[in-house]
Image 1 (cartoon, rainbow, N blue to C red):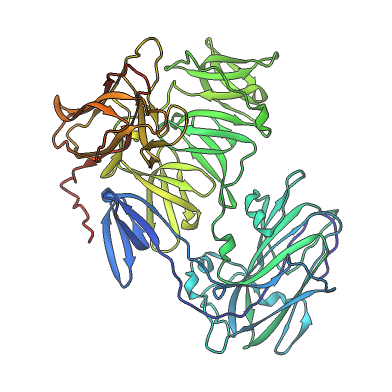
Image 2 (image 1 turned 90 degrees about the vertical axis):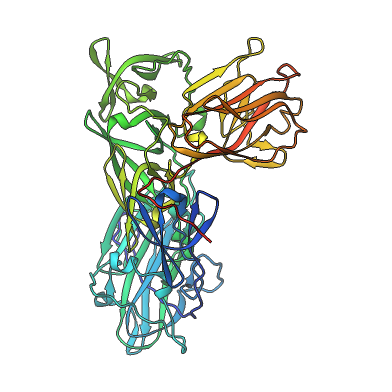
Length: 604
């Protein structure tokens, strides 16, 4: 199975290994509204209920009580997925590298990530074993990794007491070896096979042989091979791989290697950053945009997928420059709240705002309705878009749904469902449905369930009175200096930072029963502060501290707002005028009363 050197190719390869089995220590994590956590395996999710396997028992939890959850991949040990041949490790020996593994008769999964930099590419794979001389792997022994194989839990990959790997029980097989191809150009670098997961996939394919066929000089490319090999009889098998000095690889047998199980967040170097109308965002390229839908190509783990969204579900789009130094910051003062705004670069290098209506995009131009006429603007000149004309308005009261974060950075609002297996289905709000394996999900947050953070709600009214003419608009999840919120030694990832005098009024509509928060002056920048603090619900004062300073000892607030229509947070001027009056409402959250049709989950 020789490898010549020219550039495109059809892949191939194979593997082996020996290992011991130990207990697999892993569990999905479910965080409840009261801070309690359930660990287990999430078996099913519908619009209202989540089913979690904890040990030998099954537990049903109302989604209303769930704040967030994560599908935690198995912490794979070497006896589930073992490195057979390390082609990245330095070696002074010449010729091919070999690895041995004991295999029982039947199907065994393997994986080989490989990359090549400069010079002539070479990849030669062979095997030997009982009744087999060292030669290219027979085509009849190679099969594809399909959904059936991917759905097999990692703990099912086992070895027996004699050290033989046990085969997989497969009902259907399809011949050929699967592969995915990546390419890159300097100055981008690939220093390890693990770097391949950061590269977009250029092509998916399958090969009948474990071989690489090229037609022209091939440099700076990587291939990840996945397959199943059918072993004819029990025994010890030897795998042999030979490459050139500018190629690196690793050969695995067994469960999908832990090093590749979760893909890290990629560095998006071009395209668009998109913010949705209600919540969520993504980064990717635009394939198509008309009045019916906008189609984006994004990276989910190592895989590129397409997502179609309704134009009204989009709010802001900003161009991602390959060179961050070229990123331009437009002046958004006076931006329209009723019509769309296009920010376009001029010949002299400035940015001009044009008001009108975005119609869509083609391959080269933005289609824009301006002064009664449809105009075309070269996409090279478009810096950003802010859609107001038809977009869905963000409500202060959000419906019960999920915010699904994919590995790769995209966040989609919608409904998520899981029915056994490894597949999840996402019904995107304002978009099409997605079907992905749960390994592609970073985390899921239940929006507006029982615990609702004030940071996710829009105040009904905001009253801010400066001491003189300096106005400090309230900040969400950060201080006025952009640093994390901090009261004393306690740091908050969620919270509100306000300056005296600020009054925030939220509409509760009698939906909540408790209000929790940790109040205090922002550490460091609020040391000189002296403010009057008050929490009011429907005109009734629930909490009052007329002189709140950095030395005030205040326990977390636990206030009853049952049946209340409004909640008002007031931070007024104190004795020190407005010097250092930087106040924090740490982790402010409302707890909703359980609807009659749902029973609140109680954990022990």
